[in-house]
Length: 403
Ligand code: SF4
Image 1 (cartoon, rainbow, N blue to C red):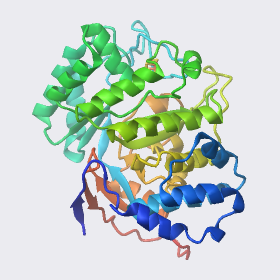
Image 2 (image 1 turned 180 degrees about the horizontal axis):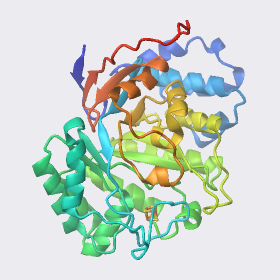
Image 3 (image 1 turned 90 degrees about the horizontal axis):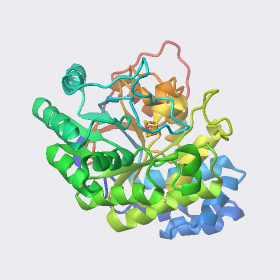
């Protein structure tokens, strides 16, 4: 099967993945005693508790936690690992807020502040449009751009590039547009959907704990508002992703509770398609008290996400943030998606990311095949898939490693 389609709820998962999973986790004696209760819950589809999630964080054998998560992703998707052909266009860095972790925002008078007018945005997108099927756009909270600005922008994108899906705007941007336009957030979403919005990328969740948010992103939407706006999107038929920024000041309990909050909403709406956990990238000036995540902590967090958020189909190794090398390993720790060709991105790179931007499909596929997976190109909403066969690479040296 080279091309196939799926519905939004399964989003490419095997329909009988829970049965496959139970078979692969047996026998229980393959697992250390300390994990038996968790393995049994995963086997029979019981949701893990807050205590279970923390236990997975504290379990001394990282590889065993990763192996358990890998079994779940393999039961759902086999060896498939997903990517898409997209471009990130960050439409403005002007923002009325000043979240402490953010290296991207600028005040309106800053010399390097920018705001792309609609024609400028269209001209930029035109360069990439022949090679992509998704534009991913998030940016600052511009003081003058209300919902009608984005309606005009999305309509132009739709008219000029009907094959390009628009994945755009975080919950706080939706809230800001509602405030500027004096309309409820659900009406903002509905109007943008009519104008062409396909899905929400899910950024800005940070940690869904208002005590943490008061310190790292004071003034941003509350946890309840983030979840409510996503719920409204799902009710309108707009799917979304959800994120988690970890490695600032949060506790392990707050991380796991964040995952459980996402899972609880998903059990009501089935509108989340992908969970994207990514670590805070530090520099010397922002949030000096951050407890930065190490590489193994990134892998463990991806694995715990896969195990705790059992009802969101996809877990993304967001290579723009964690880099290609960790992303490759993450595909063996529960992640099944590696984002896209990207080509252009500002937010993570201003925060310190060194992930390359010039990947074409063949280079992305190399990361996937080196992780022992099969590259599959997907559309924005995980409803259509095609196997991608990369060009054959002639090795420069004949090293007989397994792949
Ligand atoms: S994270 Fe978003 S809302 Fe916060 S300062 Fe940066 S651009 Fe503005």
